[in-house]
Amino acid sequence: MDSKESPELEIAKAKPSLLQELQAAIEENLRQPDVLQSTRKIETALTREQKKKMTRREFLQGLGILGVAGTLVGSLILSEQEETPRLPTRFAREAEKVKPGVFREILGFEPKICGFEPVMQINNKNKRFIVHIGQFHPAAGSLAIIRSEEIAQNQRNIERVLEQGQFEAIFVEGVSEESKEILVYLRKIKERMFDPLKPDALAWQQLVDHYFQVEGIAKEHQCPICQAILDYIVLNKIKELENDFQTQPLIVKPEEQEVFVSAYEIAKSIEILASSHQGRESEAVLEAPFRMFIDGKIEIYPTETLKENQEAAVALSEYEKKLNQLDSFKDKKAVSLLTKEIVEEENNFEKQAMDDREKVAIDLISQHPAFAPGQKFALVYGAVHDFSQEVNQFNQENPNLAVGLIYLAPA
Image 1 (spheres, rainbow, N blue to C red):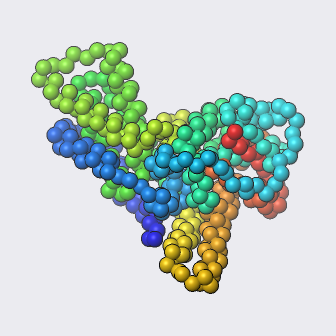
Image 2: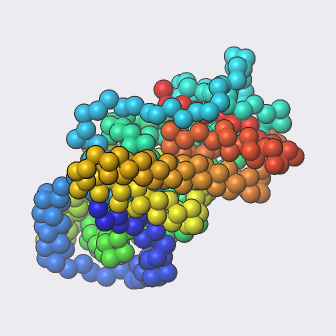
């Protein structure tokens, strides 16, 4: 099996030219779209999407690294799965008992009402806490399968927590310095290209033009997060414009009617295409922190580094190579030896994708300028991760910066 690079690494390689083209798209003057050409693009894209099928092996190949890199293809696969959702138990530390009302006092809200069971993994007298908000997504290390409806509900619950929580900063799995820069540009595209569109005679023309302009950049650079965010932006904008036109009827001049209607038909085709990308549960494709960031509701901070992601990608590649060799071995002794090697490679990948990345996340949180007593830092990360070992190690090495750990387990 040839292991393709994770989207996170693809983003890093393409970043200079990708950012240039996104910036050019923001700054470029509006141009009149070629309606017929746009129609052909839509028809080709719809045909391609209807024919597209993704196998489980291709899905595992595409996972690479978790977070932005791993979750965007989730709904394409999970809607076809019948397995009961199960999460591996990795937690190395039993929960500490706390008095009733403590979590509400610390967090400023009641986690159970938001769909989470609070667990005090490490208490802290100075009231500085990392709050690990467990999120569901396809997990490359454990290969746990969670249905898209479960992921969607979990993401809606995460949004409630981020809205109600009194967090100094929000750190999100899948965000590195490289991908954060991409996200900033995508938010600018929403603010400067789509938000200004008003319900006038040119609205649908401009929306179609902007969509294909950004879509072309996303496809050229193989940037799945760009496409997912573009779909999210355009679906919301189409709905908003339709509502505006219903409440503010527009009289279109006769000479503008043909172009207006044609552009609207293309916009509705884009809506079908974007909806097919997202599936029935859009929250399962684009996670809550990214949607909230794009909408300007929150700021997010990195939990990843490019170095750790590259090492995890190499470990995954080695694991897949060994796993793929298993079918070609017939001799029992050879199969036994290869099985041991597979277990070793899986353990190595588990270390790279789980333990090492967890340590990086804690280190990055501790470097935040507001890492002070009394502050709470949200850490939106996969529910299978356990940060207690990393936090204990950090506290031993930095007693003056000791931090507590609360885990919000998806209920």
